[in-house]
Length: 113
Image (cartoon, rainbow, N blue to C red; front, top):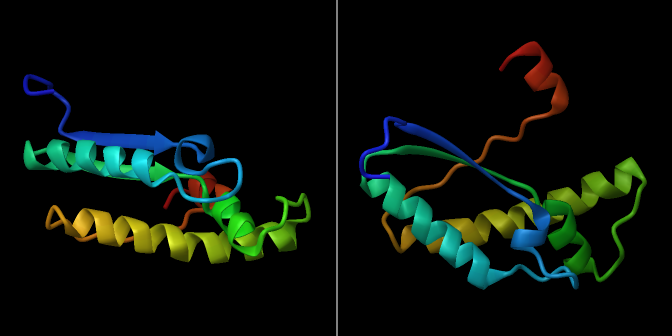
C-alpha cells in the first residue's frame, strides 16, 4: 500500500467475517480488521468501513434465529448495531481512532446522499 495512488479506501466486510454462526461477534477477525485499518490510516489513507453483521449479532444476543420478517430484522439490527459499535469503539480506541456510524438505506444510495 505504501506506493498506492489511492488515498481513499472503502472496505466492505460481511456478516460471516464478523459473526460466528451462533451469533457471537468474531472478536479475533474484528481485531485483525481494526489493526489493518489503523495501519492504513496511519499511512495517510482515508478509510471507510462498511459492515454487515448487526442482524446476526442481534439474533445471537436474543438467542433466536434470523427471521425473514422486516420488523424483526429491524429490531435485531438495532440491537446488534449498538453491540457492534461498542466493539469498534473499544478496539479502535486502542489505536487512538475515534469511530462514528452512518446508517444508509437503499433509497439513500439511489437518491444520492
